Image 1: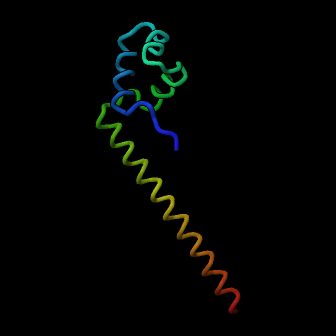
Image 2: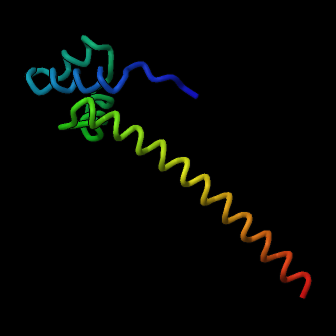
Length: 88
């Protein structure tokens, strides 16, 4: 898995600098990120504080784990239905 270069704290700090700066292009050049990345970050983290970003990350992780559990249970359910239907 690709490692992220910037933590949520750093991203939020860069976004706050972007709110104060007039020139987004220069800010992106300074932090060595593309403008597309900056605007993607702004869509995802815009208006958040560091604690909000950490909470979002925890919720996304929990959501991923829950999706895996649902997938496993669905597979188990289908297997049991196949076994029951073959016995009849």
